[in-house]
Length: 389
Image (cartoon, rainbow, N blue to C red; front, side):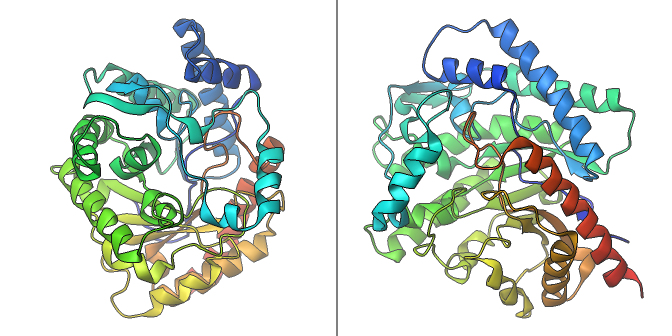
């Protein structure tokens, strides 16, 4: 994994806007309808090709396929693993329930059609096994081929995979004896995907919103200690799944939920960091642009807080249609780098993805690309300030 040796490198958190036709195919398959797999594969590849070209045009250094072939960042595993069926009943986030107007606003914003509803993902009804690595191997092969087509040098590329914790939290358990057993089974299955991504030569990004989000979702009515014990179980299971993969090839994305809402019940970063920091990864990506967590950069001024990891700082917000001014982006990067004490250990990214599940987007596509361009421009300004000496 590259550090920012002479300038601040840029990246993003994973999902990017999908074309409407692809969204229709993905939502149909999610709902259980019959879908022509060849048409879906073709549409996803065309969308990935365009997404890669637009990421490069925006000036990003570390890019991906936009998660085009996946219905969401975690529920796609139902098509790659055994044991899933039916539908879960996912708790609504506590901060949304706290403010009735926020709940109604969310319902209006989400709509009802052509959207993968992650509150109704499948559940575990049988043994979880990753029986065939062909789909992830095909995804890796496609990304490599599309990158080669561009003929443009990028710093590196990544492919995301979910943590066992987010699947266990959002895809309910009706098979295993308890939550820990379910998490461990998921981690064992996910090892196939983690390993395939690493062996293909890509950076593995583990998406683990569960390590923050579930405090005010699955564990909203329980003590903090219960949530932290869940987080420890997830971290331990994830580390087992990562055995043999160099930590320098893995980055971890943690967030408090990619939605516009109050977020006043988010667990503070300082409460979860002693557990989160134990995952064997080379970099951690955190939400640091949104109004609820922008202050937490100060924690990294504490000696040893970051440990030996790189920090991928979210400096672009992913739930509003404001386009951050490049100088605002630069100021954010500079503050965070100053707190860490070494700009070489900072990459600039986004708080989260821009289309977490197919059809669910809060930022219009044209603005997504403008935001990413502003990210690159702001990183260039910050680089001149931070590396001029």
